Image 1 (tube, rainbow, N blue to C red):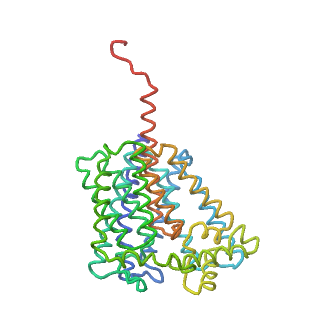
Image 2 (image 1 turned 45 degrees about the horizontal axis):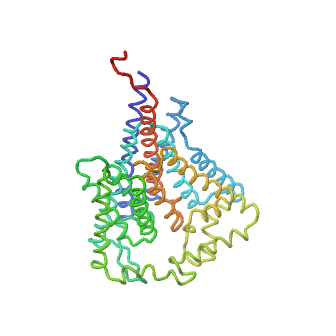
Image 3 (image 1 turned 90 degrees about the vertical axis):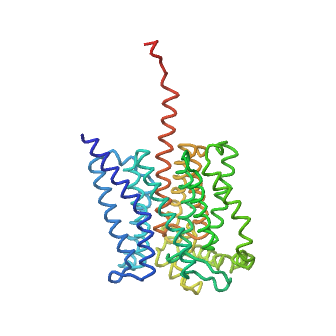
Length: 431
């Protein structure tokens, strides 16, 4: 009876977690589009703070009822929480206060880490993991639709110097939503495996791809190109292309969109965003200069700051002084961790990446789940290197939930295959 009750609770928790991506998509854009606030914080921040509290209560409740679930908590997630506590303690000890902006940044990281923990300890069955994937797919499709709706209604991001009219819907920036859209491609294609109408999933994945392109965020373009190349490599090695018909439809749509792009967009729009790559420090909208300043700043920092970091607020102040513009972080996860958490932070980041690699290896990258998981992992790596993701609550939520879901399903399928191979099959005649 107790086991049945726990299963029902876990199933309801999985449903609640699946609702977060689409609901967050709507709240995010409403809060940004209408500048909605609750006192001094935005509605989105208040909404996520309330969810973080709910996640924390749910985690402690689950651990209290089932102490054994602690074994399912990822070590990298525990390390992230310890890192946040270390940084807060250090800043409080040095300055006897923590800046509001710093507290918000650490809260954004804590949000997706605690959500990752909650998903890991509650979603243990493939059916629960599938619920998470459906939620991510809905969130990605809503995001893509909002991008095109924003383009049609004039809610756009205009790259004035490049003469490019782009759209990120009503989101604050495009550099996070392209990660969500590329992750959505992998999730939607996986959900299309074995379906009677695979073309629907293939075209929905193509919609997400087109949405990522229309943002003109270059990290997203690099990510979806590499993801497509990965899928081509996977089909050549795993020979599962014939069975994965949704992937056939997606690659076909990608080929058509590639041929149609020069007809729909001017050459200036297609290439002007990339024209600064040969301009030294201006390359990547100034990212080359920011990365150089961050690396030099870390080299000149005191030994204590190099080992334990100087905190988020100090990083932002340093970049503002040295770069001369309101830059909050380095737009690179490795440099962010070096400046915020020092060598300790970088070690955590390497461990975090290694943990996701180990998860994929545990159920084989050449399985269907592995193909989708590697696509999500490549998506994260591209965005982590080119624009930074750790402080992006919404996009890191997608990565964490997707990797958790694919791991649960992949290990479940691998376990069932091993059972069928090991357990001898006896005929009724033998009995």
